Length: 540
Length: 78
Image 1: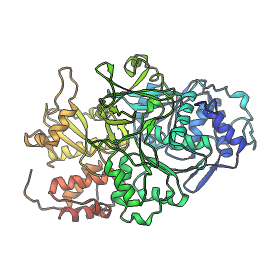
Image 2 (image 1 turned 135 degrees about the vertical axis):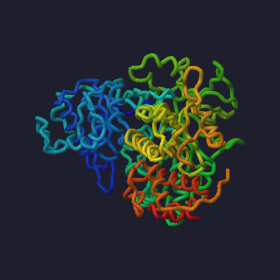
Image 3 (image 1 turned 180 degrees about the vertical axis):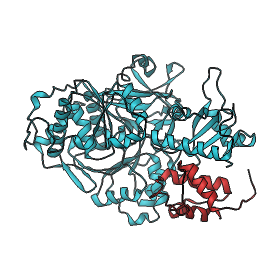
Image 4 (image 1 turned 90 degrees about the horizontal axis):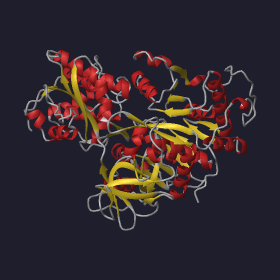
């Protein structure tokens, strides 16, 4: 039932290039890239990387925004026998270095190497610019001509096998050290079959996506699935400043399939005052996943845009490649009395279970969600010690809390991990705190997620304890906050919702020195931090 | 928590934008998105900061109209 028709992701793309070379693989900002062209560029990139000394199994960090170059780099690395490590494209130099160190990567592919100069030097890491890859006129030591399959020079490229790792997806672990989810071609291809069967996706589907391609849902569901089926893909830049562009693209291209976290649909509801001006009637599926799904969003979006049974809730995680379950399109959504939305029954060959206090529990009982699937990772990259925590008797431990109802449908209740979900991206507090703690005037810091009910959902609030005799004047305090925001923005690519400078010992610690994040967030929300005088700056 | 309504100056709003966006120099008429690089979430956080500091309410409807530091100043005055 789940026998993928290709052995590797490369075979998939090569097949498309040889059978349908003129067929568009994707449309990005009005430019069409055909499967033939994409494969030629991938092939050239692979030859170039090989010539530069890439060896089998070498890791290559890829920090590129949405666009054809990202696919050329991602699959070019794999075609060269390497392992792609796609990361958030606006990561700062220190962050890139940190991720490269974790997987011992020798290369990093970026848009503009000069842009990295602002940060600390990136040592021992060879920086390649995406425009050096796979372009015509670059000396790759062989003329590969116009052969649509780009076979010339193949003899120098290794044979890639189904069990070879295709890529490593970094996600935030609860302790803050990013975890590299290692996925083989076989695992990813199985998940593609699961997604296609579970969502009844056909080659006639038209995908419209702005999701960041470096991350699981934007990568696997929104681009690999259309490549697998040779379905139409309209890719947009991963920016939601202009939600109208997303809706316009759906209307213009008669999009049938789109996916986004709940906050993106909320933004549409709140920013688009003339929803009747958009004709989204072509949509078959608007998947709502990667964040808690709100009933108000499901109701509101369909009502505003005149749709019925199109928005469906789904569940997944990078450790299972991406997709685990999705509610049935074309049917009314279901929610329980707490307002938790059903995220559907598991996809084919996925088994779900609920673990509480060391044993599996029955329908209706809340516990940690467990997933058994052939698309599950076998573990985090080069971290064998994490295997015991990640698995329970062959099941993957998700760290999310939920229950199965009597019919086997999954409801997600919350998360067990101490993560902040910011714009659909999971961030561990520790990742932010490490950036802030490096500032000389900072004694310690704590980052928590605060949701004030606005469309954007949870925002990162940072509480900073200042060193004695540092930042005692308002001008110095102002400068320190500006520096803190600037550092977070440069390293992690977003700005916190608020930075507060605090009195010493404002941040409560456990007896073994860990920050009590939940308690801090509660003390902020109920006004105690302010009323008890812990907040030094600013005065709001 | 209620606090007395404060008088608003443009310099205070420049300071506030500076703190929220992590930028030292912010002009009175700077455009938030095109000049200062604010993103969607940053705009929401700027609005929340103004609401907290000046005890005003800015509705979701008004947010798309806030394009510059001066627009924010006008909203802060209520």
